[in-house]
Length: 365
Image (tube, rainbow, N blue to C red; front, side):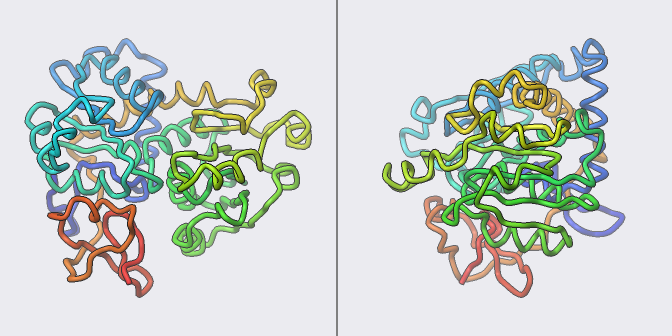
């Protein structure tokens, strides 16, 4: 699904791997479309008649999988796929490449979630239809970020001039990585990074903040950081990203949003959470008008409806791709898809004088 953009000569595609590849203008176009769908859903009931969405979920999901399926059904399309790879030929040892090539012949668009970093990018190399990244390990989750920014646009009325606190597992939190990378593009946004030292954001996220000239501060106290935030983005401590139960237990209850902390926040601050929630927000917060995480999930469905329409129906809606090179060295990140799918090319790109893996965005030594 790649082609040359005739006006400027670079490669473009119809795959959403990383929301950072979209311009603010493209993001705004999706938001506008989502709002139109919210206002007149009946006008879109047959927008995708005859189209099929394949949801390939190698990892558990409730909101992302079901919101994509619901989005396609509300547009008049149909869905196929699996939510357990052990119920597919993956259990027999089928490669990612072969799975994607086969599904490309059945569906018009693919939404994939996988526990290994870089899987969505790898899938896009072999798909004959658009690929949407629904989360690849602890790397990225662009459609959750789409959910977040549709929510922000509707509830705050802007995507700029915001002070955003992100709290929890900032090291493995793919939703946090995608959100920071996207909101860093908008004017005068600042960030408070609230985590333990062990779960601090990766350095490449700090590089992005500095590249865009965004102010940021690091905090180890939610109670201290909450007082002047416009947005608080809470995340769970992800048990599945830890090597041992002991490591998880040491981190899981460090940051909990309760009534005492919320009383220190501004009256117009909003609370977002990609969900699922474990114990990082107490249930008595749910009825507070600032708590928008359930409404946020509904906004996500409309954002995904808009995205599907853009990718399937708008020929001019293409996403720029970065220039890559084939190198001799393999990515050494043990969580990268290149470690298990050995046929993948050693693709890299240059960033700040460093060679980066095109799949997982980690530095190649």
